[in-house]
Image (cartoon, rainbow, N blue to C red; front, side, top):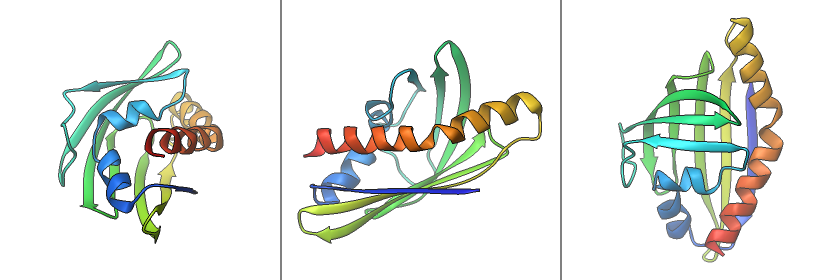
Length: 145
């Protein structure tokens, strides 16, 4: 399955790229009731980094290990090494619209696990994508504009 969401923000490519290069930005744009608890996050993400975190969905912890790849000013990919999905690849793409505007594209490729419990968790997360990414767009605009 592929999910894609995009939005524009009144901020330069450099500002958008710099914001997303910080591991702490993930928690800043994640909606309640989801809480992100990072485990030894890097200050700035770079190629080949691994980010270990727990995503709390209310009282339920979901442990995740992501590998960072294809890092550039135009985005990066986080690929799940361990977590709730059989496969997860999240490409963050930043595209110049003009010198004051950047388009942010989130492109997720995922496959659900076959285990009934994890299939249900993954499906629930997938169903929530439109709200999750609408919130992330709103928060990103509020922080950067």
